Amino acid sequence: MSFFNFIDYVKISIFSGNGGSGCIHFRKEKYVIKGGPDGGDGGNGGSIIIKGNYNLYTLLHLKYIKKIYAKNGESGTKNNQRGLSGKNSILELPIGTVIRDFYTKKILEIINNTKKKILLYGGEGGFGNFYFKSSVNKTPRFSQKGKEGIKKIIILELKLIAEIGLIGFPNSGKSTLLSVISLTKSKIDNYPFTTLVPHLGIINYKNNKSFIIADIPGIIYNASLGRGLGIRFLKHIEKNKILLFIISAESLKVNIIYKKLLYEIKNYNKKLLNKKILVIISKSDLINIKKKKKISEEILNFNYKFILFF
Image (cartoon, rainbow, N blue to C red; front, side):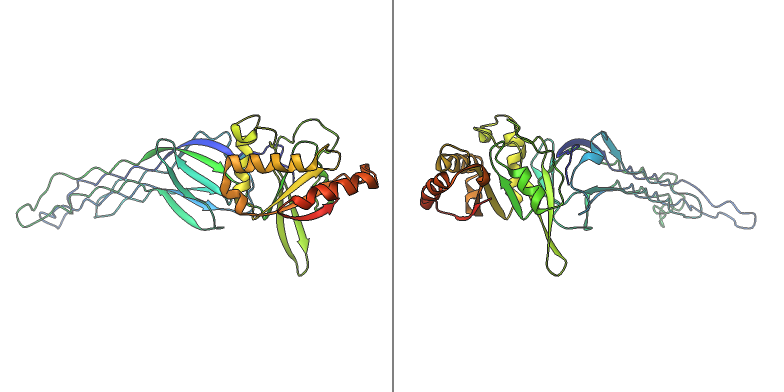
């Protein structure tokens, strides 16, 4: 699946609901003398809840949403009736989304499907005058206001979760490989520039099992230093279980390309080198037997396993 509208970064203001105010009321019935206080408590404000959804692969549905509100709680009423609690606002996010407070550190990360987590609690409802009735104050003429909700500015940052990440410089054959081994229909040609959005492919195998493979864009020289779109998309590699390096057979020095890819990964996050790394030499149909033999000799010094020619 190709995401021409792939969005992996969103900033949103969120507001939990205010609690409802308590009610001031006294029973007024024809045959009841001095009925006493019966003002009910206010309802709690709605909370902001986040929920994982494995059917989402992008934050596109939140791109144009700047503010999210939960409903306020209603005020209490007579007959000691509590006000209705405000409706919660549920924010569905792709698996792998990191939620950060704009002013502080990371809040939490979505790693499970359908699991809900309260991000902001709504304000508590205030007590009505019935609550304050006592032996020394039988007719309280006051109640309590509900507590205000909470406001936060959050950053939603998506890191794709895929078993395999395709890593390679532009025009190395990543999109072609993905289109062959999955149902992905990427726009493929001999472009001198990199793919601008990630592509995901679902690979089906025996017993109706499947896994996801991702074409990670933005890998160019000095991507780890922020050149181009490198930093924006290198983060997606963090969630891959296996890194699959794609090196074009047309490269003058395959081993140099391999070392440069390793450098970009290491310079971004050296812990990524602890992942399992495989290497594919692509476009092997464009070279002769002599060139293949030369490449085979070059890769003997590599420290990782290979799927040799594609």
